[in-house]
Length: 285
Ligand code: ATP
Ligand code: ZN
Image (tube, rainbow, N blue to C red; front, side, top):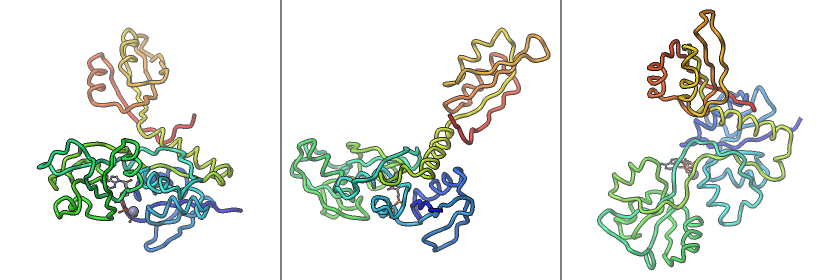
């Protein structure tokens, strides 16, 4: 039987959640240090552990059938026309960040024309500058981009930001978001029709869709039914069950959004009791 190869980042910001997602999809394997390839014991799947920058190309060339990579890396490599057969299958909602322009707080630029921008993303930045008719110079640098404005290499930078703490500690101010990014499941147009690849994509969708969902159960007075149901965030039609005590009901509902303490307090105020909230592990529609 043909084995599917899935490429994930070996060590870095994408690794832990990529591995955890694959495990939730039923792909069991034991992680051993310094291995490039791990065989799954539960499915005909091999995991390739590589640098994130290599993932788009490995999938584009068909060496891996699918993989998980940041949208930023994908778009950068696509902008140079190298990865033309890649397909973004599922946005995965983790490793969220943005690629932004940032400038030293001490300077203010009214116009980017003629300035020099340091970045590890010359493709995405070049496209942005073209689309906005800006004539700026790009200096490609991999590593310590945030220091370049202070050593005379660049006027400003274009770099990844998640919380903004790194910019803040380097006295830089975010001035413009160029693209938003998160981890994405990628396949290639030659392999995405394979039965096992299709099955794995649908499992990834089920696990990803379940992430923010919660299942809530509580008891209440029948007379408060409508009001209580309306308090539930994005609930699908709830199940209402009569309890032995004739005035009491139990309400069970699948909520498409997280249930915060505020909602729980409001439910309690309206007489809800025995409130149980469960995480949803998989959601198959
Ligand atoms: P590798 O050794 O695999 O090349 P790397 O140093 O290029 O690793 P990481 O720093 O682990 O990569 O980041 C991997 C991805 O995590 C990024 O491409 C991006 O999609 C995402 N990410 C999320 N938040 C951040 C952040 N604050 N800074 C950098 N990347 C982030
Ligand atoms: Zn990398």
